Length: 155
Image (cartoon, rainbow, N blue to C red; front, side, top):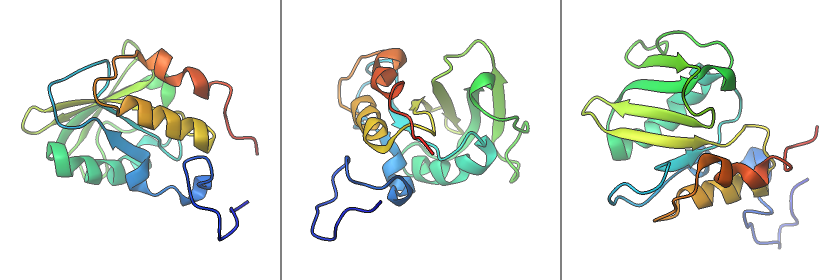
């Protein structure tokens, strides 16, 4: 249900399907590394190869081209070893934090992103994105996602 035209769009009133890719990736301001993550990403699905291109295009503006991505195997559908274009290697592990995705750039940059579960309801996802991208936030991934566990979409 869309808000009435006179209703200002706030994180709580943005319909889930209206959240643009640029609003689904949020990064901490460029500064010395702080906390457990460098920002957050809210993918539409658990299909990693289809979700990554738009996120990487946006991340590339700040961190440069990606060389490889590490992710937790249990958090995503089965994925190939490389993205279809072949330039980015995908590395799935069972030992990494299940709520993160690590992007290593060609230049050696390393960006750790909190992954907000795709089925998280809009306001809870927006809150997690904002918190993880706040300057100086040092909360763990579990703390950042605490409010999303009871706020998933019902279809």
